[in-house]
Image 1: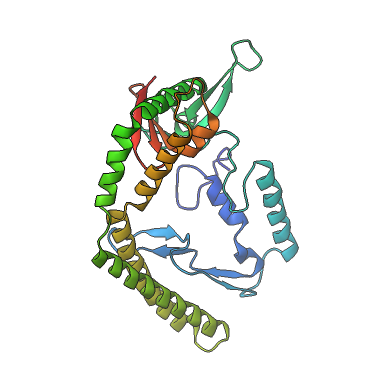
Image 2: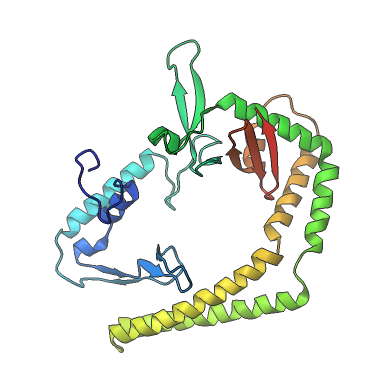
Length: 307
C-alpha cells in the first residue's frame, strides 16, 4: 500500500502494520460490533487512545449486515495464528525473543528499539550488530550508529564486575533509603479504600453490562451510564496509582533485594559474558551517542559504561 501510494486513513505519512492488522481483525466486517475500542481522555490535552483495558469493551453479535462471511473471517484468524507461531509470538501477542537483547536495547536519540542484524554474511569477518529501527528506516530521522553484539556483552561484563565488587557500597545504602521512603500507615489506609472503591465500580459496570445484554435498558442510556462509571473508575485508579508510584517504591525495593540475592549466589567476578545473568538482572539497555551504554537494572538503577 505504501509502494502504490495509497492514501492512509488519517493522512499519515505511511501505512503502519498495526493499522492493517486492526482492519483485518475488526469484527465489524462479519456483522459484529465491538464497543469502546478507543476512549477519550478526561483531562487536557484531550486525546483519543486505544483501549488497552482502561475501560470495559462490549461485544454485540449480529449487529448489522456483514460484508464478509464467518468462514472468511475465520480464515484470516487462522493465518494470523499460523504466522504468530512462525515468528515466535506467544499467546498474549508478545514476541518470544530469540535473543537476550531483543526489544531491550533502546535508542537515546529517538526512543526506538534496536534490531539484530548480520553483516558480511558468509565471510570470515561475518558479525552481528544491533541497529536502531528508525535509523534503518530513515537515517535523516535518527543518526544513531549500530553497535556490535560483542561490544554490548563486554560492557555488561565490565558493569557487572564493578557492581559485584562494590555492591555493599551501592545496593545496601540504596535499599535502606528506599525502605525509609516507603508509604506510611495513613497512605496505606487510603490505598485500601481506593482499592475497595475500584472493586465496587467494577462490579457496578458488570451489572450494567448484564442489564443491557438482556435488553432491559436502551443502548444510549447504557453508554451514558457506562461512560460516567468509566470516568469515575479511571480517576480512582489514577489516584491509587499515583500513591503507589510516588511513595511505594515496591518495584525498586523488590528489584534491589533480587539483585542482592543474585550477587550472594554469584559473588565472584566473572570472566565471560553470562546470558542468564544478563536476562535476570537487566531491564533495558540505553545506547547514547557519546559511546555510552547504560544498563537499567531490575530495580531501575542505571549504570553506564563506555564502549
